[in-house]
Image (tube, rainbow, N blue to C red):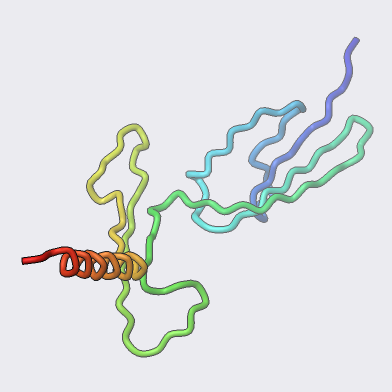
Length: 134
């Protein structure tokens, strides 16, 4: 017995030609390296054997390029004057080997750590002065 299957057309962004036209069930591997970094829209159109259509839209973000880390400025922050920024960009490489050098972004020491260190040092000095007898 032969049963007809639904067909699926996969479109990326506003391209008129589908990137794939397949019969269900579908196992599809999308190569994001062919897309530019940024927001994209996948449109999946299904067509049943009786001619009915269903559409599903899926927004996604491609980030294949080097990752950018920024310290010193936050999203939607109000600033004035001169602001020191620390910017680092690093790539994933070939993902078969991991390179330590340049793969981590240096960060400044957080203020809470300075407060903790100064508090501990003050307590230690107080303890030494009160416990030491000549």
